[in-house]
Length: 181
Image 1: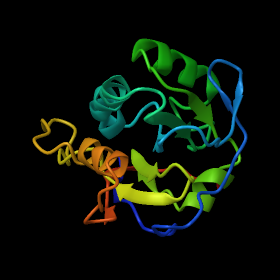
Image 2: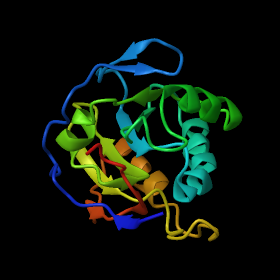
Image 3: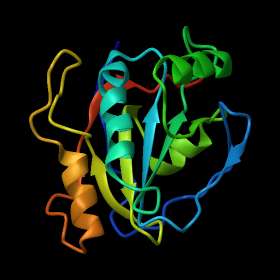
Protein backbone atom coordinates (compact mmCIF):
# COMPACT_ATOMS: atom_id res chain seq x y z
CA UNK A 1 0.00 0.00 0.00
CA UNK A 2 1.49 3.32 -1.07
CA UNK A 3 -0.24 6.10 0.93
CA UNK A 4 -0.92 8.88 -1.57
CA UNK A 5 -2.74 12.21 -1.51
CA UNK A 6 -4.81 13.44 -4.42
CA UNK A 7 -3.57 16.23 -6.67
CA UNK A 8 -5.67 18.86 -8.34
CA UNK A 9 -5.50 18.85 -12.14
CA UNK A 10 -9.15 19.49 -12.99
CA UNK A 11 -10.09 22.88 -11.54
CA UNK A 12 -13.39 23.99 -10.03
CA UNK A 13 -15.74 25.27 -12.73
CA UNK A 14 -14.07 23.24 -15.49
CA UNK A 15 -16.14 20.80 -17.52
CA UNK A 16 -15.57 17.21 -16.44
CA UNK A 17 -14.20 14.99 -19.20
CA UNK A 18 -16.76 12.58 -20.63
CA UNK A 19 -16.12 8.87 -20.99
CA UNK A 20 -17.74 5.66 -22.12
CA UNK A 21 -16.82 2.78 -19.82
CA UNK A 22 -18.15 -0.71 -19.14
CA UNK A 23 -19.70 -1.43 -15.77
CA UNK A 24 -19.72 -4.67 -13.79
CA UNK A 25 -23.28 -5.13 -15.09
CA UNK A 26 -21.84 -5.18 -18.67
CA UNK A 27 -23.65 -1.93 -19.56
CA UNK A 28 -21.73 1.09 -20.84
CA UNK A 29 -21.90 4.41 -18.98
CA UNK A 30 -21.13 8.02 -19.87
CA UNK A 31 -21.61 11.32 -18.12
CA UNK A 32 -25.17 12.50 -18.63
CA UNK A 33 -26.99 15.54 -17.37
CA UNK A 34 -30.18 14.99 -15.45
CA UNK A 35 -29.03 14.80 -11.85
CA UNK A 36 -28.47 17.84 -9.66
CA UNK A 37 -24.96 16.56 -8.98
CA UNK A 38 -22.70 13.65 -9.88
CA UNK A 39 -20.05 12.09 -7.66
CA UNK A 40 -17.29 10.26 -9.49
CA UNK A 41 -15.09 8.18 -7.22
CA UNK A 42 -11.90 6.61 -8.54
CA UNK A 43 -11.63 3.42 -6.51
CA UNK A 44 -10.38 -0.14 -6.68
CA UNK A 45 -10.85 -3.60 -5.20
CA UNK A 46 -7.82 -4.13 -2.96
CA UNK A 47 -7.15 -0.77 -1.28
CA UNK A 48 -7.82 -0.69 2.49
CA UNK A 49 -8.84 2.99 2.22
CA UNK A 50 -11.53 2.11 -0.35
CA UNK A 51 -12.68 -0.89 1.68
CA UNK A 52 -13.03 1.37 4.73
CA UNK A 53 -15.00 4.08 2.85
CA UNK A 54 -17.18 2.00 0.50
CA UNK A 55 -19.95 1.79 3.11
CA UNK A 56 -19.84 5.60 3.41
CA UNK A 57 -20.15 5.95 -0.38
CA UNK A 58 -23.10 3.54 -0.42
CA UNK A 59 -24.58 5.60 2.42
CA UNK A 60 -24.38 8.79 0.36
CA UNK A 61 -26.36 7.10 -2.39
CA UNK A 62 -29.09 6.26 0.17
CA UNK A 63 -29.28 9.79 1.61
CA UNK A 64 -30.20 11.46 -1.69
CA UNK A 65 -32.65 10.74 -4.50
CA UNK A 66 -31.30 9.69 -7.88
CA UNK A 67 -32.39 13.11 -9.20
CA UNK A 68 -30.29 14.81 -6.52
CA UNK A 69 -27.19 12.61 -6.74
CA UNK A 70 -25.73 10.13 -9.17
CA UNK A 71 -22.63 8.20 -8.06
CA UNK A 72 -20.19 6.49 -10.42
CA UNK A 73 -17.25 4.38 -9.26
CA UNK A 74 -14.34 4.01 -11.68
CA UNK A 75 -11.52 1.51 -11.33
CA UNK A 76 -8.45 2.76 -13.20
CA UNK A 77 -5.90 0.40 -11.66
CA UNK A 78 -3.80 -1.78 -13.91
CA UNK A 79 -6.16 -4.75 -14.49
CA UNK A 80 -3.18 -7.11 -14.13
CA UNK A 81 -2.39 -5.83 -10.61
CA UNK A 82 -3.16 -8.41 -7.89
CA UNK A 83 -6.85 -8.30 -6.90
CA UNK A 84 -7.82 -5.96 -9.73
CA UNK A 85 -9.36 -6.51 -13.17
CA UNK A 86 -12.95 -6.83 -14.28
CA UNK A 87 -13.75 -10.24 -12.73
CA UNK A 88 -12.50 -9.06 -9.33
CA UNK A 89 -14.56 -5.87 -9.71
CA UNK A 90 -17.71 -7.97 -10.17
CA UNK A 91 -16.92 -9.84 -6.94
CA UNK A 92 -16.10 -6.59 -5.08
CA UNK A 93 -19.34 -4.95 -6.24
CA UNK A 94 -21.39 -7.95 -5.11
CA UNK A 95 -19.64 -8.41 -1.76
CA UNK A 96 -19.98 -4.71 -0.93
CA UNK A 97 -23.52 -4.42 -2.33
CA UNK A 98 -22.57 -1.37 -4.40
CA UNK A 99 -25.66 0.71 -5.12
CA UNK A 100 -24.02 2.66 -7.95
CA UNK A 101 -22.34 1.73 -11.26
CA UNK A 102 -18.76 0.44 -10.96
CA UNK A 103 -16.83 0.95 -14.20
CA UNK A 104 -13.48 -0.21 -15.52
CA UNK A 105 -11.02 2.24 -17.07
CA UNK A 106 -8.69 -0.33 -18.64
CA UNK A 107 -6.67 2.23 -20.60
CA UNK A 108 -6.37 4.52 -17.56
CA UNK A 109 -7.23 7.41 -19.89
CA UNK A 110 -10.14 8.63 -17.75
CA UNK A 111 -8.04 8.76 -14.57
CA UNK A 112 -5.39 10.75 -16.44
CA UNK A 113 -7.99 13.21 -17.83
CA UNK A 114 -9.34 13.86 -14.32
CA UNK A 115 -5.92 13.88 -12.69
CA UNK A 116 -6.90 11.09 -10.30
CA UNK A 117 -3.95 9.79 -8.33
CA UNK A 118 -5.26 7.74 -5.41
CA UNK A 119 -8.12 5.50 -4.34
CA UNK A 120 -10.57 6.72 -3.30
CA UNK A 121 -10.31 9.99 -5.24
CA UNK A 122 -13.76 11.70 -5.36
CA UNK A 123 -14.86 14.42 -7.80
CA UNK A 124 -18.20 16.19 -7.18
CA UNK A 125 -19.80 17.69 -10.29
CA UNK A 126 -22.67 20.17 -10.56
CA UNK A 127 -25.76 19.72 -12.75
CA UNK A 128 -23.82 21.05 -15.76
CA UNK A 129 -21.10 18.45 -15.13
CA UNK A 130 -18.53 21.03 -14.02
CA UNK A 131 -16.22 20.33 -11.09
CA UNK A 132 -17.65 21.74 -7.84
CA UNK A 133 -15.43 19.94 -5.29
CA UNK A 134 -12.51 17.52 -5.39
CA UNK A 135 -11.65 15.84 -2.14
CA UNK A 136 -12.28 13.42 0.62
CA UNK A 137 -15.50 11.64 1.54
CA UNK A 138 -14.97 12.40 5.24
CA UNK A 139 -12.26 13.18 7.78
CA UNK A 140 -11.21 9.56 8.40
CA UNK A 141 -7.70 9.66 6.94
CA UNK A 142 -6.74 6.11 7.90
CA UNK A 143 -8.74 2.94 7.21
CA UNK A 144 -9.26 2.11 10.90
CA UNK A 145 -10.56 5.60 11.77
CA UNK A 146 -14.23 6.39 12.22
CA UNK A 147 -15.40 9.58 10.51
CA UNK A 148 -16.60 12.57 12.51
CA UNK A 149 -16.95 15.12 9.71
CA UNK A 150 -18.94 13.99 6.68
CA UNK A 151 -17.30 16.40 4.24
CA UNK A 152 -18.75 15.10 0.98
CA UNK A 153 -22.30 14.90 2.34
CA UNK A 154 -22.06 18.52 3.55
CA UNK A 155 -20.73 19.65 0.17
CA UNK A 156 -23.46 17.79 -1.72
CA UNK A 157 -26.07 19.50 0.46
CA UNK A 158 -24.45 22.90 -0.15
CA UNK A 159 -24.42 22.28 -3.90
CA UNK A 160 -28.07 21.20 -3.85
CA UNK A 161 -29.00 24.32 -1.84
CA UNK A 162 -27.09 26.68 -4.13
CA UNK A 163 -24.60 27.52 -1.37
CA UNK A 164 -20.89 28.11 -1.86
CA UNK A 165 -18.51 25.27 -1.05
CA UNK A 166 -15.81 27.05 0.97
CA UNK A 167 -12.92 24.70 0.23
CA UNK A 168 -13.09 23.42 -3.35
CA UNK A 169 -10.08 21.09 -2.97
CA UNK A 170 -9.52 19.02 0.17
CA UNK A 171 -7.04 16.28 -0.79
CA UNK A 172 -8.23 12.74 -0.31
CA UNK A 173 -5.82 10.07 0.87
CA UNK A 174 -5.58 6.47 -0.19
CA UNK A 175 -3.52 3.98 -2.13
CA UNK A 176 -1.81 5.17 -5.28
CA UNK A 177 -3.45 4.24 -8.57
CA UNK A 178 -1.51 1.29 -9.95
CA UNK A 179 -0.36 2.59 -13.34
CA UNK A 180 0.59 0.32 -16.21
CA UNK A 181 4.26 0.42 -17.10
